[in-house]
Image (tube, rainbow, N blue to C red):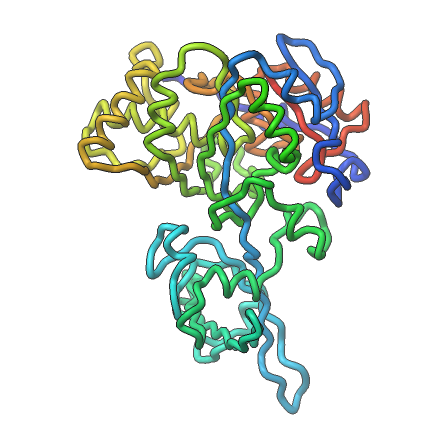
Length: 409
């Protein structure tokens, strides 16, 4: 497949600092909602979302849960003064399992690939310690720089009853996006989390879901809107700016996905209504699923690992249908007696991509010249400029804590 060269400058726009939402609204569902359908734009409120969705819509949410991934340690003080502060930012687990859900349940010890702030002050022979109080029990968390060049950190703690998820909840801080340019406060712990979050492992929130409330979810149910919950553990790479002249050289982050057999069966049975992703992470998961079915059509033992440019390597005319893809996956799961699939995706969606699963998207407003703005442009074409210009001119709030949009091309 011939790929058109993407000029990144064409996906730039001026984002005034005052339109970046630094804090969440008092009520989640009172955010503005830009409703885009068939090229037309109207201003609505998020609480109106259920009545704006087409009948028989099928929504897919991302049920990942943000972990307090920023853990701060302090070196012991010396005669020369106070010990240096070192930040350890959890990225992905190494031991006892690379599967995030399993790693969070580790007892007594584990190791993670991390970003390390002030790393030059941390000698490999120095064990950093942090005292914690969990359920009135005093616990000491220790951290060792196991492999400095790979930034692998080993953690251990002196209470065999506590899982790593308990330790992180007590020791860590909410990992707010860097563009908010502020430290996390107590309000961020519940608000930088969806009301339906369930599976610990993300280091960034699936922000499209931050607007949903129990009332909105109930209204969706009353309208007969199907709701399904996938999991993609959002990684820090989602904030990585594109620097490469050729965007295809941009190193896309790998993110772990978890999908159930029920999801595949429902996609297979889907006949009417639109499949709508709640957030770019849900969309990336759904589209990655299609490509896994394609990979299985070529190799019955293919790994559930979706390469960055998988969608641009075949003649689109010879690709299989969504039903064929889901049948391949269902057959694979039944053959291996799997009720759940755990995989990884690096899928890069940019203009020219043909969507195989999703027909709509609920999403916030994203940074200029980012992978996410390219994804939006892939979905709505050149109308992305009209959408963003309208949002800017009508004082929509941008980025993670900002307002929302319902995009139905």
